[in-house]
Length: 163
Image (cartoon, rainbow, N blue to C red; front, side):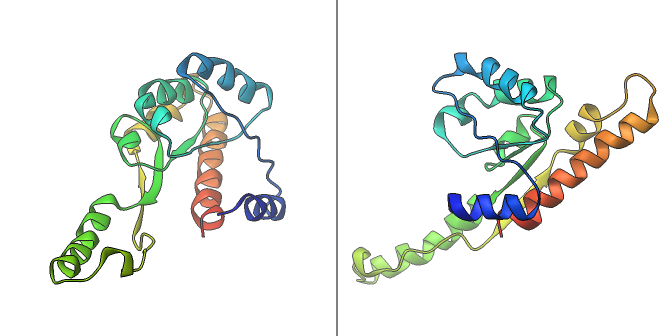
């Protein structure tokens, strides 16, 4: 989704997008501090090699900040992240077999169309969700409020921003 479309979608939903970035892992703490000052209600982590290699640190900082985060690759969830939404990688590999078959039968690779992923999956780490949003102080109303915040974030991220 392009930047202009993201901005117009955010405006329709009355959401403010706060772009943040880091050139290296040493900047992560400062970025999370900036998000806290900006009172960010959720975090979308883009699919980037430097971020992916440092996913454990990002996940830890998001949990420490009690910030609901959604990631593109599923391996963030396997590392303790809250939510992932992205292309189904095994599905893409299975689909690539049709390309290989066509090439082996004589098709020129340059003549084959480029395809976008057809299957997407959303995965919620229930253990992380239960732990991150449980109420340590016994204040049930505050726990429900945090839970509602996660539900709203998931609904927005899944049904509005990527479709």
